[in-house]
Amino acid sequence: MDAASARGAPVFFEPCVDSTNLFLRRMADSAADGTAVVAAVQTAGRGRLGRSFLSQEGGLYLSVLLRPEAAPERLPTLTPVAAVAVCRAVETVCGVRGGIKWPNDVLLEGKKICGILVESVLGGERPCVIVGIGVNANTPSFPEELRPIAGSIAAVTGQRVDLRALAAELLREFDALYAAWLPDGGRSVLAEYRRLCLNVGREALVGARRGLCLGVGDDYALIVRWEDGAEEALRFGEVSVRGLY
Ligand code: BTN
Image (cartoon, rainbow, N blue to C red; front, side, top):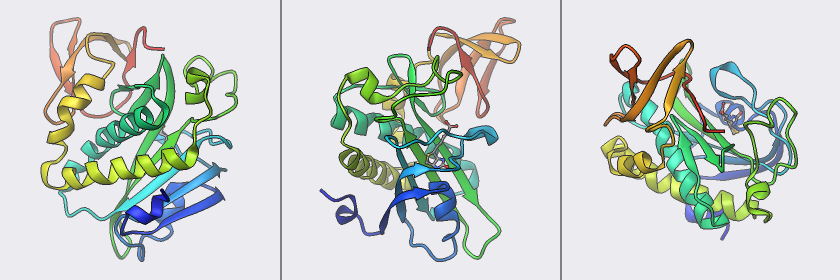
């Protein structure tokens, strides 16, 4: 099935862009709610916390522009919901079940196979949110410094991923979960997220602080008990997890 045929909003298929998030950002004033772009290569893929995202041929780089009428404080829950959409699509198309490193990295057998970057576009004529998803589907290799943590689906399964099928399924799952998120803020997918979350029961490291991940709260915060016994709900930031990669 063509990804575009199942949706009301357009899907652009591009051989190469700087970044699919930037591609949509440039259309922020005019694009319809739900407009998506799928690219084969990105020359300036963007990651979380100002990092870059390696975006060679073989990966799947996809972004969706959204215009939710939701309070800004609800937006962070879109990211874990997108991670669930990735897990579902990867399981359907590739036959393997991933897990989620809070809040939104998807891992397969201890290797990161997907990163998600949600950006709010404010200040223009029409504010919007862009959800960007990068999947290391058939990515042939990684630079040495990424090899301990990054991997591709194809390397794990030994099978080439059908990128068109994965794009179509990912859009289908994301569209469905987003439609549910609009009224419920992600409540209906919380139990699934908790099952997929790899942090729970493992040691958490934030800077020099150490603790135990107890679970995921109703607002998708990661609940950590620190060594001094204090409990905290983490809502953003980088949490290292011992023994995950
Ligand atoms: C991360 O792991 O730090 C997040 C990476 C997000 C990468 C995706 S690829 C599609 C979209 N376009 C970008 O420039 N970034 C996101």
